[in-house]
Image 1 (cartoon, helix red, strand yellow):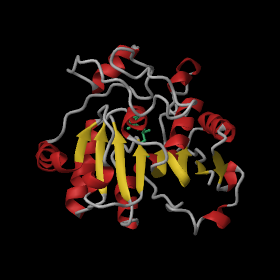
Image 2 (cartoon, rainbow, N blue to C red; image 1 turned 90 degrees about the vertical axis):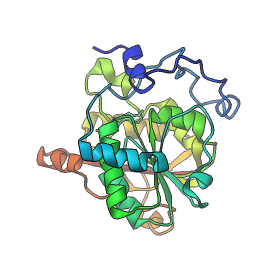
Image 3 (tube, rainbow, N blue to C red; image 1 turned 90 degrees about the horizontal axis):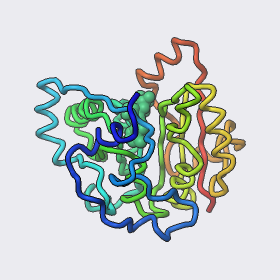
Image 4 (cartoon, rainbow, N blue to C red; image 1 turned 180 degrees about the vertical axis):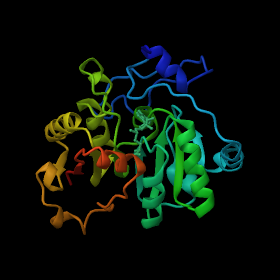
Length: 271
Ligand SMILES: C[S@@+](CC[C@H](N)C(=O)[O-])C[C@H]1O[C@@H](n2cnc3c(N)ncnc32)[C@H](O)[C@@H]1O
């Protein structure tokens, strides 16, 4: 089994420099997670180290387009408006995989600036190809750990939406600590959302769904906007700042074929 050092090194291969002191999390709120994600103190991560080669076409596309729309996760605050070349409501998608949902949602919501965050380069490379092919202008990509992005790159109260579709369920009990959606991460997400901003989560894993429901219900900054979270979606669907609809990805189709129920959680940050 991989230890924490293996997993963290997978996305931080060569830079031995200790990070600058945390500027955005210290003092921004009492309930954000401690600075355990630095290179000096690797934390348990929600992803596994996976290597995969790009196809020659993916590599060409990557070389052409990644420098324009992609960045490695860093310890510095992100100026999203400048990166996108326009001010617009900012939505992040954590673990965007191959980006099927990212691309379709960006096309359906051209008024939003959308950042896909993923550790797995071949997944990002597929999305880069799609962005090139369909000339999608409102997506930017970050490669690395989304928790680092939330902690170090995103200012409190600055996100209009956070999407987490089919986070890795880590089904074995001894791996539950690796699940992304823990109280500290949900508190961090809630802190980064602006009042009225939306957290949208979907999972096909029944046990993780129970865990997510409990964690979300305990977060005092969030209120339920759909039936699963104790709200009434019809009352919020029209006024919410991001769409509640979600395209079905290949990953989700597999879950449907396996007979798994999909649980959908939509919360809003208290105004
Ligand atoms: C089960 S896949 C789902 C992919 C996609 N959302 C979908 O619905 O098809 C979960 C993805 O989350 C990514 N991931 C897990 N933890 C992450 C983290 N902390 N930061 C960025 N990506 C992460 C994994 O690499 C993986 O690609």
